[in-house]
Image 1 (spheres, one colour):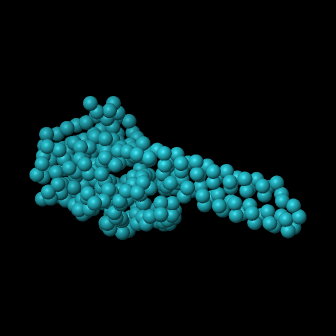
Image 2 (cartoon, helix red, strand yellow):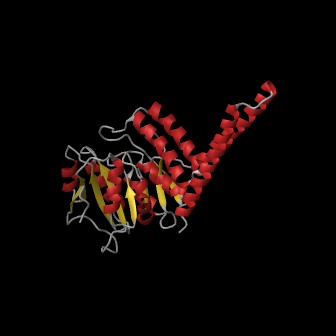
Image 3 (cartoon, one colour):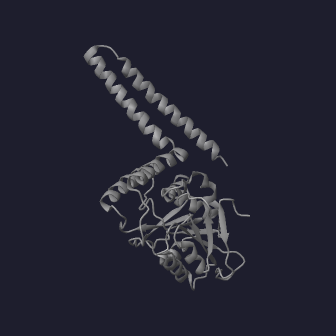
Amino acid sequence: MPPLDIEVDNHPENELTGADTTKPYVSVVLPAFNEEEAIATVIDSVRNALKGTSHTYELLVVDDCSDDKTVEIAASKGVKVIRRRMRGGSGSSRRTGIRESQGAIIVMLDADGSYEAGDIPRLLEYFPEYDQVNGARTSEQGTLKLLRTPAKWIIRKLACYLTSQNIPDLNTGLKAFKKDIMKKYLWVLPDGFSCVTTMTLAFLANGFAVKYIPTTYHKRIGKSKFHPVKDTASYLNTVVRMVMYFKPLRVFMPLAFGLLAFGLIKSVLSLVYTSTIQESDIIIIMTAVLLGAVGLLADLIVAYQNRD
Protein backbone atom coordinates (compact mmCIF):
# COMPACT_ATOMS: atom_id res chain seq x y z
CA MET A 1 0.00 0.00 0.00
CA PRO A 2 1.41 3.42 -0.94
CA PRO A 3 1.98 6.06 1.77
CA LEU A 4 -1.07 8.15 2.67
CA ASP A 5 0.31 11.32 1.07
CA ILE A 6 0.45 9.89 -2.47
CA GLU A 7 -1.83 8.29 -5.02
CA VAL A 8 -0.46 5.96 -7.69
CA ASP A 9 -1.90 5.61 -11.18
CA ASN A 10 -0.66 2.40 -12.77
CA HIS A 11 -0.96 1.84 -16.49
CA PRO A 12 -0.67 -1.64 -17.98
CA GLU A 13 1.13 -0.24 -20.98
CA ASN A 14 3.93 1.16 -18.79
CA GLU A 15 7.12 -0.04 -20.44
CA LEU A 16 9.43 -2.72 -19.10
CA THR A 17 12.01 -3.19 -21.82
CA GLY A 18 15.12 -5.32 -21.99
CA ALA A 19 15.97 -8.94 -21.49
CA ASP A 20 14.39 -9.40 -18.04
CA THR A 21 10.92 -7.90 -17.64
CA THR A 22 10.23 -9.24 -14.15
CA LYS A 23 11.78 -6.21 -12.47
CA PRO A 24 13.10 -2.97 -13.99
CA TYR A 25 16.81 -2.47 -13.62
CA VAL A 26 16.52 1.29 -14.16
CA SER A 27 13.87 3.62 -12.78
CA VAL A 28 13.65 7.03 -14.47
CA VAL A 29 12.02 9.51 -12.09
CA LEU A 30 10.59 12.82 -13.31
CA PRO A 31 9.56 15.18 -10.47
CA ALA A 32 6.97 17.58 -11.88
CA PHE A 33 5.00 20.64 -10.83
CA ASN A 34 2.99 22.49 -13.46
CA GLU A 35 5.00 21.17 -16.40
CA GLU A 36 2.16 20.70 -18.91
CA GLU A 37 4.19 22.44 -21.63
CA ALA A 38 7.16 20.09 -21.38
CA ILE A 39 6.15 16.80 -19.79
CA ALA A 40 5.08 15.01 -22.99
CA THR A 41 8.28 16.00 -24.79
CA VAL A 42 10.45 14.87 -21.89
CA ILE A 43 8.67 11.50 -21.63
CA ASP A 44 9.15 10.90 -25.36
CA SER A 45 12.80 11.94 -25.08
CA VAL A 46 13.45 9.47 -22.27
CA ARG A 47 11.80 6.65 -24.21
CA ASN A 48 13.78 7.47 -27.33
CA ALA A 49 17.02 7.56 -25.32
CA LEU A 50 16.45 4.09 -23.85
CA LYS A 51 14.92 2.57 -26.96
CA GLY A 52 17.14 -0.14 -28.31
CA THR A 53 19.33 -0.35 -25.21
CA SER A 54 19.64 -3.51 -23.14
CA HIS A 55 18.29 -1.79 -20.01
CA THR A 56 15.02 -2.88 -18.46
CA TYR A 57 13.40 0.31 -17.21
CA GLU A 58 10.32 1.96 -15.80
CA LEU A 59 9.30 5.61 -16.12
CA LEU A 60 7.67 7.41 -13.20
CA VAL A 61 6.24 10.92 -13.05
CA VAL A 62 5.91 12.27 -9.51
CA ASP A 63 3.42 15.14 -9.53
CA ASP A 64 3.65 17.64 -6.68
CA CYS A 65 0.02 18.87 -6.70
CA SER A 66 0.08 20.52 -10.13
CA ASP A 67 -2.92 22.70 -10.92
CA ASP A 68 -2.52 22.43 -14.69
CA LYS A 69 -2.77 19.42 -17.04
CA THR A 70 0.55 17.80 -16.09
CA VAL A 71 -1.07 14.68 -14.61
CA GLU A 72 -3.52 14.22 -17.48
CA ILE A 73 -0.82 14.56 -20.12
CA ALA A 74 1.57 12.20 -18.31
CA ALA A 75 -1.18 9.62 -17.81
CA SER A 76 -2.10 9.81 -21.49
CA LYS A 77 1.49 8.84 -22.33
CA GLY A 78 1.04 5.54 -20.49
CA VAL A 79 3.55 6.06 -17.69
CA LYS A 80 3.25 5.44 -13.98
CA VAL A 81 2.02 8.64 -12.32
CA ILE A 82 2.47 9.20 -8.59
CA ARG A 83 0.34 12.07 -7.34
CA ARG A 84 1.29 13.71 -4.08
CA ARG A 85 -1.72 14.92 -2.11
CA MET A 86 0.24 17.65 -0.33
CA ARG A 87 2.59 20.15 -1.98
CA GLY A 88 6.06 19.46 -0.67
CA GLY A 89 8.61 20.80 -3.13
CA SER A 90 11.11 19.24 -5.52
CA GLY A 91 12.91 17.35 -2.76
CA SER A 92 9.70 15.76 -1.50
CA SER A 93 8.87 14.57 -5.00
CA ARG A 94 12.32 13.07 -5.42
CA ARG A 95 12.09 11.23 -2.09
CA THR A 96 8.70 9.86 -3.11
CA GLY A 97 10.10 8.75 -6.46
CA ILE A 98 12.99 6.93 -4.80
CA ARG A 99 10.68 5.09 -2.42
CA GLU A 100 8.21 4.07 -5.13
CA SER A 101 10.77 3.06 -7.77
CA GLN A 102 11.63 -0.57 -8.44
CA GLY A 103 14.97 -0.26 -10.22
CA ALA A 104 18.41 -0.90 -8.77
CA ILE A 105 19.62 2.25 -10.53
CA ILE A 106 17.58 5.44 -10.34
CA VAL A 107 17.91 8.14 -12.98
CA MET A 108 16.55 11.61 -12.29
CA LEU A 109 16.09 14.62 -14.52
CA ASP A 110 13.83 17.64 -14.43
CA ALA A 111 10.53 17.54 -16.31
CA ASP A 112 11.03 21.00 -17.84
CA GLY A 113 13.10 19.96 -20.86
CA SER A 114 16.31 21.60 -19.62
CA TYR A 115 18.38 18.39 -19.60
CA GLU A 116 19.34 16.05 -22.43
CA ALA A 117 17.50 12.75 -21.94
CA GLY A 118 19.79 11.40 -24.64
CA ASP A 119 22.61 11.40 -22.08
CA ILE A 120 20.91 8.76 -19.91
CA PRO A 121 22.59 5.78 -21.65
CA ARG A 122 25.96 7.50 -21.12
CA LEU A 123 25.25 7.81 -17.40
CA LEU A 124 24.38 4.13 -17.18
CA GLU A 125 27.62 3.06 -18.85
CA TYR A 126 29.54 3.76 -15.62
CA PHE A 127 27.59 1.33 -13.43
CA PRO A 128 28.32 -0.68 -11.37
CA GLU A 129 31.86 0.77 -11.20
CA TYR A 130 30.54 4.11 -9.89
CA ASP A 131 27.87 4.70 -7.27
CA GLN A 132 26.58 7.99 -8.69
CA VAL A 133 27.01 9.58 -12.12
CA ASN A 134 26.05 13.22 -12.75
CA GLY A 135 25.64 15.37 -15.81
CA ALA A 136 27.90 18.42 -15.45
CA ARG A 137 26.29 21.32 -17.30
CA THR A 138 28.47 23.17 -19.77
CA SER A 139 26.47 26.43 -19.55
CA GLU A 140 24.05 28.34 -17.32
CA GLN A 141 20.63 28.89 -18.91
CA GLY A 142 18.59 29.74 -15.83
CA THR A 143 16.92 33.03 -15.01
CA LEU A 144 18.94 35.87 -13.37
CA LYS A 145 22.17 34.49 -14.84
CA LEU A 146 24.33 37.37 -13.56
CA LEU A 147 23.28 36.56 -10.00
CA ARG A 148 23.14 32.79 -10.20
CA THR A 149 26.50 32.15 -11.88
CA PRO A 150 28.78 33.82 -9.27
CA ALA A 151 26.65 32.58 -6.36
CA LYS A 152 26.82 28.98 -7.61
CA TRP A 153 30.57 29.30 -8.21
CA ILE A 154 31.23 30.48 -4.65
CA ILE A 155 29.05 27.76 -3.11
CA ARG A 156 30.59 25.09 -5.34
CA LYS A 157 34.11 26.13 -4.36
CA LEU A 158 33.10 25.99 -0.69
CA ALA A 159 31.72 22.49 -1.23
CA CYS A 160 34.94 21.43 -2.98
CA TYR A 161 36.97 22.60 0.00
CA LEU A 162 34.71 21.07 2.62
CA THR A 163 34.53 17.67 0.87
CA SER A 164 38.11 17.68 -0.48
CA GLN A 165 36.70 16.72 -3.88
CA ASN A 166 36.50 18.40 -7.27
CA ILE A 167 32.82 19.08 -8.05
CA PRO A 168 32.21 20.35 -11.60
CA ASP A 169 28.47 20.86 -11.04
CA LEU A 170 27.09 20.86 -7.50
CA ASN A 171 23.37 21.16 -8.15
CA THR A 172 22.79 19.36 -11.43
CA GLY A 173 19.36 17.80 -11.79
CA LEU A 174 20.56 15.06 -14.15
CA LYS A 175 21.92 12.18 -12.12
CA ALA A 176 21.92 8.40 -11.79
CA PHE A 177 22.68 6.54 -8.59
CA LYS A 178 22.37 3.21 -6.82
CA LYS A 179 19.10 3.07 -4.96
CA ASP A 180 20.36 0.94 -2.06
CA ILE A 181 22.93 3.61 -1.17
CA MET A 182 20.61 6.59 -1.59
CA LYS A 183 17.97 5.02 0.65
CA LYS A 184 20.42 5.31 3.56
CA TYR A 185 20.46 9.09 3.22
CA LEU A 186 16.82 9.92 2.52
CA TRP A 187 16.64 11.43 5.99
CA VAL A 188 18.99 14.27 4.99
CA LEU A 189 17.18 15.26 1.78
CA PRO A 190 15.42 18.64 2.12
CA ASP A 191 12.11 19.50 0.48
CA GLY A 192 13.36 22.22 -1.89
CA PHE A 193 15.68 22.61 -4.88
CA SER A 194 18.79 21.94 -2.78
CA CYS A 195 17.77 18.28 -2.65
CA VAL A 196 19.98 17.45 -5.66
CA THR A 197 22.91 19.19 -3.97
CA THR A 198 22.34 17.06 -0.88
CA MET A 199 22.31 13.88 -2.97
CA THR A 200 25.71 14.75 -4.42
CA LEU A 201 27.25 15.70 -1.09
CA ALA A 202 25.87 12.63 0.72
CA PHE A 203 27.76 10.37 -1.69
CA LEU A 204 30.95 12.47 -1.78
CA ALA A 205 31.18 13.02 1.98
CA ASN A 206 30.80 9.30 2.65
CA GLY A 207 33.46 8.14 0.23
CA PHE A 208 31.31 6.72 -2.57
CA ALA A 209 32.53 6.80 -6.16
CA VAL A 210 31.01 9.76 -8.03
CA LYS A 211 31.51 10.45 -11.74
CA TYR A 212 30.73 13.53 -13.87
CA ILE A 213 30.12 13.68 -17.59
CA PRO A 214 29.57 16.90 -19.57
CA THR A 215 26.00 17.57 -20.64
CA THR A 216 24.23 20.31 -22.56
CA TYR A 217 21.80 22.45 -20.57
CA HIS A 218 18.86 24.12 -22.29
CA LYS A 219 16.58 26.97 -21.33
CA ARG A 220 13.65 25.42 -19.51
CA ILE A 221 10.20 25.14 -21.06
CA GLY A 222 7.64 27.10 -19.07
CA LYS A 223 8.01 29.32 -16.03
CA SER A 224 10.87 28.87 -13.56
CA LYS A 225 10.06 28.12 -9.91
CA PHE A 226 13.55 29.13 -8.72
CA HIS A 227 13.65 31.85 -6.03
CA PRO A 228 17.11 33.48 -6.31
CA VAL A 229 17.57 34.71 -2.73
CA LYS A 230 15.76 31.95 -0.83
CA ASP A 231 17.07 29.06 -2.91
CA THR A 232 20.66 30.39 -3.02
CA ALA A 233 20.63 30.68 0.77
CA SER A 234 19.25 27.14 0.93
CA TYR A 235 22.09 25.84 -1.26
CA LEU A 236 24.69 27.46 1.02
CA ASN A 237 22.99 26.10 4.13
CA THR A 238 22.84 22.65 2.56
CA VAL A 239 26.58 22.55 1.87
CA VAL A 240 27.52 23.48 5.45
CA ARG A 241 24.85 21.25 6.99
CA MET A 242 25.85 18.19 4.97
CA VAL A 243 29.52 18.53 5.86
CA MET A 244 28.54 19.00 9.50
CA TYR A 245 26.63 15.72 9.28
CA PHE A 246 29.47 13.71 7.77
CA LYS A 247 32.79 15.64 8.09
CA PRO A 248 32.44 18.09 10.96
CA LEU A 249 36.19 18.61 11.40
CA ARG A 250 36.28 20.34 8.00
CA VAL A 251 34.11 23.06 9.55
CA PHE A 252 35.18 23.21 13.18
CA MET A 253 38.95 22.89 12.92
CA PRO A 254 39.63 25.79 10.53
CA LEU A 255 37.44 28.00 12.72
CA ALA A 256 39.16 26.79 15.90
CA PHE A 257 42.72 27.25 14.58
CA GLY A 258 41.89 30.60 13.02
CA LEU A 259 40.37 31.88 16.25
CA LEU A 260 43.27 30.47 18.28
CA ALA A 261 45.82 32.21 16.05
CA PHE A 262 43.90 35.48 16.39
CA GLY A 263 43.75 35.08 20.17
CA LEU A 264 47.48 34.38 20.47
CA ILE A 265 48.41 37.34 18.27
CA LYS A 266 46.09 39.60 20.23
CA SER A 267 47.60 38.34 23.51
CA VAL A 268 51.13 39.15 22.30
CA LEU A 269 50.04 42.64 21.26
CA SER A 270 48.36 43.14 24.62
CA LEU A 271 51.59 42.18 26.42
CA VAL A 272 53.61 44.53 24.23
CA TYR A 273 51.36 47.54 24.65
CA THR A 274 49.81 47.00 28.10
CA SER A 275 52.24 44.54 29.77
CA THR A 276 49.27 42.27 30.60
CA ILE A 277 46.92 39.84 28.93
CA GLN A 278 43.38 41.14 28.58
CA GLU A 279 40.23 39.26 29.54
CA SER A 280 39.13 39.33 25.90
CA ASP A 281 42.33 37.51 24.92
CA ILE A 282 41.55 34.66 27.30
CA ILE A 283 37.92 34.49 26.11
CA ILE A 284 39.00 34.23 22.46
CA ILE A 285 41.55 31.49 23.19
CA MET A 286 39.10 29.52 25.32
CA THR A 287 36.44 29.82 22.63
CA ALA A 288 38.90 28.39 20.11
CA VAL A 289 39.66 25.47 22.42
CA LEU A 290 35.95 24.80 22.92
CA LEU A 291 35.30 24.89 19.16
CA GLY A 292 38.06 22.34 18.64
CA ALA A 293 36.65 20.12 21.38
CA VAL A 294 33.14 20.30 19.91
CA GLY A 295 34.56 19.41 16.49
CA LEU A 296 36.38 16.38 17.87
CA LEU A 297 33.25 15.26 19.71
CA ALA A 298 31.13 15.67 16.57
CA ASP A 299 33.68 13.69 14.54
CA LEU A 300 33.65 10.94 17.17
CA ILE A 301 29.85 10.73 16.96
CA VAL A 302 29.96 10.49 13.16
CA ALA A 303 32.63 7.78 13.32
CA TYR A 304 30.57 5.84 15.87
CA GLN A 305 27.44 6.01 13.72
CA ASN A 306 29.38 4.80 10.67
CA ARG A 307 31.26 2.04 12.50
CA ASP A 308 29.42 -0.70 10.58
